[in-house]
Image (cartoon, rainbow, N blue to C red):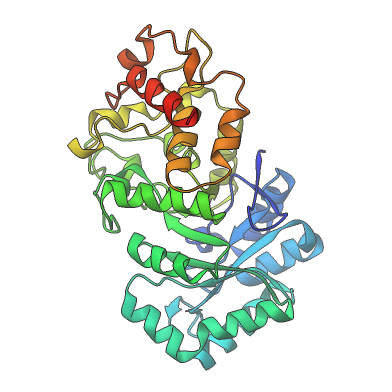
Length: 364
């Protein structure tokens, strides 16, 4: 398992986590065995926005003994009083729900306390007026909440909360469908979504990825908005390559799903290569590097995707991106203009011209 450090903290988070959207389809015994196996295999990040109340007690039984080694995302606004998921902005209901979740999980603290599922500015105004954000901030001061997060599908709303300077982590839906304006939650333009990812990286706000498979639609050519199916591995790698991303949280139903997803860690680059999306990306995505590294290997040894990423991040205001670039063993000025990358790029980026541009930028 690979781990990535939370920028605003010391937590080392597994690049694969577990979403709880589908696991309630298993028995409590199966749920308990599945999450125990996940920890055994190196997964340490668990999102608790479940469709039902059912998974909480099995999670508590399975993970209470390793509580200091794992991290929970708990959502302030997700309620389970009826046994199934509900959403509210009522502060008293939220407090009861969070207390119930902590009791079921056999824990007295929350690693990541989330402002839950806010997609509209009107909803943000409601939770502010209700005192939800103030309550989470107070719990953070007390040490009950270690980090504050936000879950949303809307780039403009995420930007507004980032402006508030209160969050350390953003739960956001990242997949090729949404990024290229296909699907139920495909909010925001192509550039707007990438700008958000870069800002998170620049601001030191980690991203935990939900809906990496677009609810499974991308995995079936009959439901994929592109008419072509992608694999789970392609979708996971696509999300992991985006700036700011710390972990991807696929929903699993059982041990079988878990073990299949875990083979991602041992898969070769060819199995993770998502360059096929270049054949159905919209016109406004043409000429823009998405860091897929399909252009590799470079005869001169350049990591073309990483060089592009540091350039884009530096222009977005990331003060550390220039240092990261300077520490590269092979920089843009080593480009030999052979054209290998240009021929292979699925997004038709003129990387030879781009390397000249990047070299000039960093030598200013």
